[in-house]
Length: 197
Picture 1 (cartoon, rainbow, N blue to C red):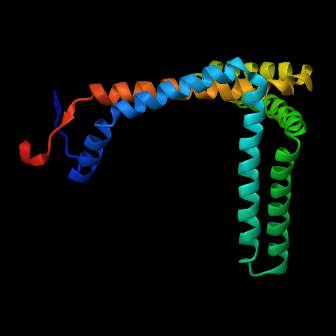
Picture 2 (cartoon, one colour; picture 1 turned 45 degrees about the vertical axis):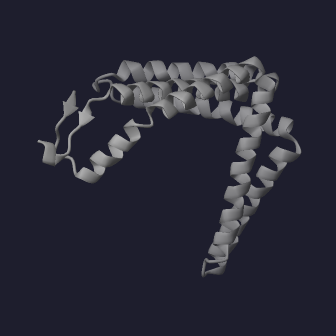
Picture 3 (cartoon, helix red, strand yellow; picture 1 turned 90 degrees about the horizontal axis):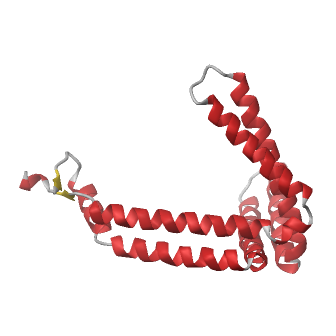
């Protein structure tokens, strides 16, 4: 089966090259599923791993902001960029120094963010009830609030496993997504070049 289109040849070439790699996408998906299963098997270790990843991102982000601050021309802008970068870098360092304390703080922030996002979704949905699908937004808001409240009511004990659950679920969904993408690439119709049409 072929698919004739008016796509430029360079895009067709890129799509055909990607299609030949379908097996790699499936292999990556299977690997992510395995990692997700391992994370589900030990949520505490997965939580600590999540804290380390967040710590690395904050540390790198802080260093980049500090470097950027030296390129700013005015003293006031320099001070705020430098201070922001320094706080990010310190937070990243603290995540490595005491990952358990960092997981407690991050879990609390996650609970607050989920509750706030749920309230905002409810407000948006009820503000425009004439919009199609507003009931789904209400349902999503209620679920976000409930998840946030469950995490908050079990805090700080929930900080031992919540981030690990989020990491495990993300790995599993990413794994299935890569597998589905690889299968779709394998079964996709072939693209013909314009000269073959």
